[in-house]
Image (cartoon, rainbow, N blue to C red):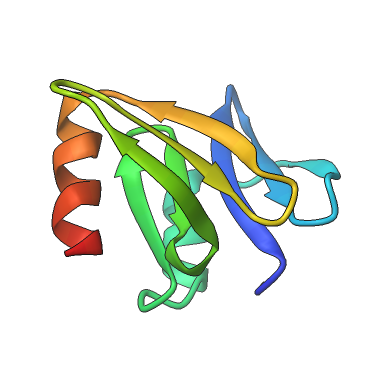
Length: 92
């Protein structure tokens, strides 16, 4: 689980983004992932996105949004206002 960067909702499936650059499509809801993942490492930033806080890099907080890279591959994610505010609080 420590190699998991993020999990994104994708219809009835979820896309698991890993540090090695691979993505896996799994038939499991984000709610099920939230229940299984360690809460000290993983947080649900948006309705359709869970991220591994330990893997967040290069955060750019804008007035109403945020952009950040994850993992060694620097995979980019953009989040909206509420998620940016939550991210700001978590990283303080």
